[in-house]
Amino acid sequence: MRDRWAAAAYLFGALGTAVVTVLGAPLLAVPAQGRAWAERHRRRAGRLLGVAVPARPMTRPMTPPMTRARVGPALRRGLLWPVAHVGTALPSGLALVLCVGNIVTALVAMTAWWAFPADAPPHLQGDVPVDGWTVALTAAPAQAAVLLAVAWWGGPPLARAHARLCLALLAPTPAERLSERLSARVETLTRTRADALDAHAAELRRIERDLHDGVQARLVAVAVRLGVARESLAGAPEDVAVLVGDAHEGVEEAMAELRGVVRGVYPPILADRGLAGALAALAADSAVPTRLSVGRLDEVPAAVETVAYFAVTEALANITRHARATRAQVRVERAGDRLSILVTDDGAGGADEARGTGLAGIRRRVAALDGTLRLTSPPGGPTALAVEVPCGS
Image (cartoon, rainbow, N blue to C red; front, side, top):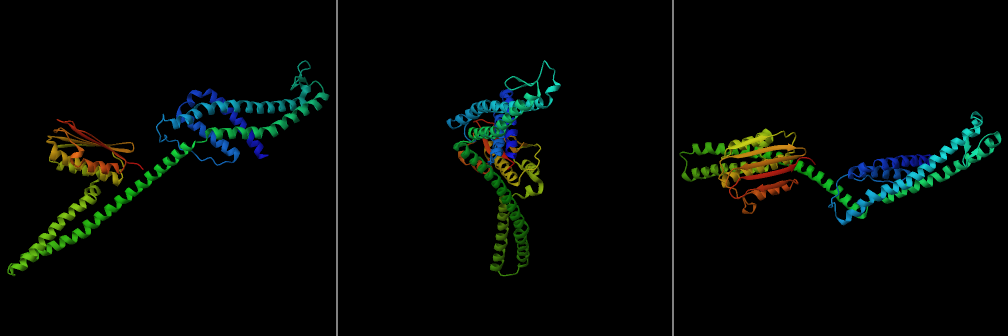
């Protein structure tokens, strides 16, 4: 019983969507609208047949839009399926509507024929007038029973046939299934990589704090003690004083190297001042007068902050060493889920990534986050380094 009501509801719904398809054909020609409309019918057909129909991603396909592998499925969904849907849903739905309408007409004629004017009695299928109890109690119930049997036994097969047609025409091809699996896999890998980078950045911050607050603090204490011992050994043998002096200098050299390591692991200034403050410090310390413009950044992942900081640091260092520039400009802003960095100078130009000026290192850091780097540096200048890094997952 429930299946028959579900089939009737499906056919009525298919009739309505067929009319909408005819009336809204120009709108459904838009790829996004057409895909959403097709997905709706796939889910309806799957529910009627009791088939699990996984939702298909509404993302842009990974393959180029005009390749031979996509022309067939695109034409099938864009042309064949709407035509088949309208061509099958309209007659099936109208047949059910006619059955139901004539059943209602027969029941009305059987019970209320006498209420109609004598010169305009109700008519059954086949133009049979109901103008007396004999016809009302024989022909009308017979017509209602026949039409009810037709709708009762014929409706579900029609609904299932239309649902199977929908699933057959809208089923993804093997190439599309592979593309969808690859797209889902890429999304998963992108998300997990972003999580891994965030965890890595957090671990680098922890290492930086441990080195700064632990090892470096102990080396400073040792250096202080050695300095005091060196001053107090004025009358000691010369070899002892030399050993203490060498130890003192060695500890200071180790501290200098450790500070460099700490800055390389994770710049402490990022943790203290954030990206905007760290870039302001870089611009202020640059040997070339640098103008800094920072737009609204919102929340930037730590890994992105690190890449942006090192990119600007290396770019300003290159300007100082190689560009012979008189001024530079750094502009940082966020547009949607991407952080944009633009470093320009009025120097001699001619920057070449192949000459080992640090640009390759910037590119590697940026590429690790799926970012892009564009360098424009004609001979004679100016030079523009544009970096974009995604901030989302």
